[in-house]
Amino acid sequence: MSAPIVVGTDGSAAAGRAVDWAAGEAALRHRPLHIVHAAEIWPYQVRRFVPPDAAERTSPAGHAVLLEAESRVLERRPGLRVTTALVVNATPDALRDETEKAFELVLGHRGHGGFAGLLLGSVGLRMAGQTAVPLVIVRDGAAGRGEVVVGHDVAEEPGEALRYAFEAAAVRGARLRVVHAWQLSVDMAEAGYALDEERLNDERRARVIEAYAPLHERYPLVDVANDVLVGHPVSELTRVSRTADLVVVGAHPHRWGLSRLGSIGHGVIHHAECPVAVVGGPR
Image 1 (cartoon, rainbow, N blue to C red):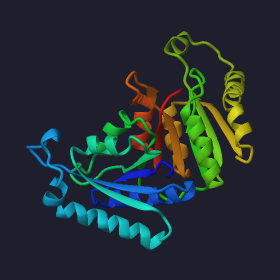
Image 2 (cartoon, rainbow, N blue to C red):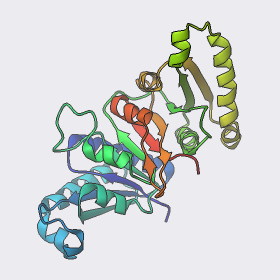
Image 3 (cartoon, rainbow, N blue to C red):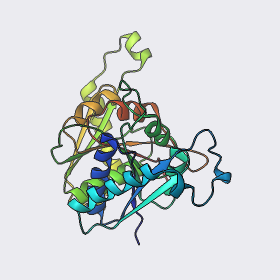
């Protein structure tokens, strides 16, 4: 069986949207869907002391959450392979365990227990910096216009984010927009250098095209556009997210094999107006 799309749910409206998105993603990629709910038992939540039947005895509400999510999916996509898991553990630990052999993890932008003013729930924020598989944060917002957006830094080697973005555009039949935004250094700005922005943009565009050229050969049917401009990467990616189906940002590889969320990824998942995929750095 192919690696599943894993989605976490707590029964909230945001989690329901994440389940819907994950089900659509599973159908597009011809993968099974695995729905996870974590039953947190405080203050005695010590993993090695949790009995095997703890989930059955302690969380009838958790079973109800999973049943509702599974029924919701199968009502709309009766042919989809769906499994569920009720795990007695802290939510981040439960999700990390359940995604060890997953293709990607999908979460809502916030769930129950979060303060209304927070743009991203604590679980999503923690997983964005820790998960070893791509993480998709599903946000509210209008439907996109058939476009996947990926941010690319010409100072870094092409990584998994570009590969993931090409594949995501291919399975959706969508255009891929590669966005590279750069800023003048403080030293240049203070010195008042007269820079030829058009020439610098052209040079950077050539490097962007060179970076994704091998992937374009692998996915020749994907229509690729590129935006190279002077601006803050978070601001520019947030702007294009208003009409995108998905924005893809990279995470930096961590020495333990996990990912470390950088400042740009952190900003984009807080402010984007469409789902955001956080994908690990170069292999």
